[in-house]
Image (cartoon, rainbow, N blue to C red):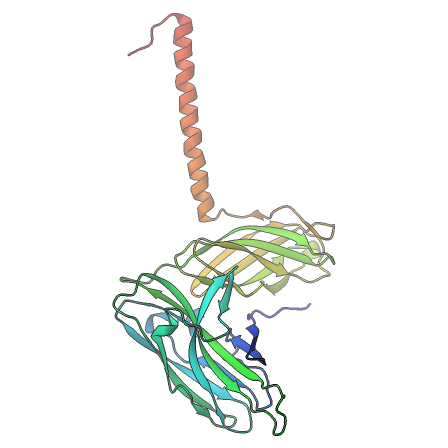
Length: 352
């Protein structure tokens, strides 16, 4: 029985830079919390975050990215480690960059165009020399001005290595090896803005080739961006089968108030069911779990009936309460109307 990995993979941003092929990756997890850049003629470099703020040391997301809340007029710093797997020393250029969240993806700018956040970040040293098969530490300092407005900003801290061209080959392509760390910074007086999300429903289906999939609708109900990871288990299937965990689709970043489908792809051989299903979704310290019963459709490229969940999510309880109140008011109005009608029919004058 095949199991899929639970760690989410790195996100690569590939772009052209001044006519040279350039591969850039934002560190997105792994055993050491970092990802190396792509292999160039001079080797490769990697980057990882070495520390989180004292109140976020139990936050898995803050151990991968710079995630914090800062009051205006405050300065923080973070230590980063730059690694070099080549056989010779490498000079690395460090710089901050802009980023946005677009179509539920964290999108770093493929150049040094500054946004407000990147203009507040300085890195020391800015051009460290990393020894062969070794590493060095650099410090990123973020200084928030007194007049900074409230809100969350997004950016990245980049490490770039440009390989040298082969002697005598003027037209040779220089490989640009770039890796980075995401930055999510919430600015404003008071405490950290809350993070939260809900799982609205689960829908089983089959892809074009017949592979079973489950689609979960997730909505960001908090006030900060979230990066979603998740796992799914199936149990009590035909002949008592139990499978999982299966990794949820990765790379989804949701702005506050937005939602997106999260897809879990399962093993091709799984029968239709019925199955007991459990989905665990996480973003940092926030965890949400739903359980229920589902059956996959028999036809390819179709969606089945939504899973019958064991319990309503909080927003559904609110909706149910509103509906119950409206129904109660409607019933009360109907009773009063009937009593008035009966009085008129009996010749009794209505009370004033």
